[in-house]
Amino acid sequence: MGRAFYFSKINFKMVIKIKDKWMDYLSLFARIGGISAIVGYFKRRNSKKKATEEARRKHYAEQEAQLNLLKRALKGLEHHEIFQSCNRYINRGWVTSDDLEDLDYLYKPYKALDGNGTGKLLYERVHELPIKNLGGK
Image (cartoon, rainbow, N blue to C red; front, top):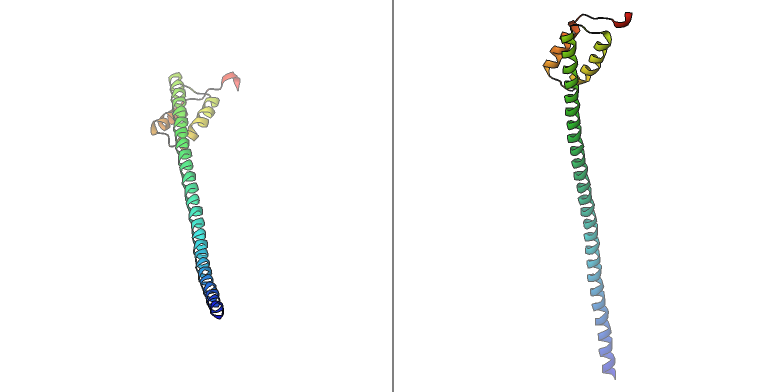
């Protein structure tokens, strides 16, 4: 019986050593896993941030493209109206002060949108026409 007690004591000490080693390994794996989890979290966060930034950049580019199309359309409409009005006034040979005011109202934004030089020439020619006041004003 003395021998069995000796072996059980040794086995118990070995079991404790093995348990301690396994606890060290588990602790190491847990730390590595924790670090991996933290690194993974920041990678996912950075990836989401990049995706959000890219989506925002794409959205702004689409909005800018639409704004440029609207500017071109507006400039085209103003161009048409300025040319129609100027040709009508020039063919008539005179202009009223209300006509000039309306033309100025159209021409200033057209010029700000980089309207062409032909519009400027017609605008200047209309301003050289004699002004008639209708209705005894």
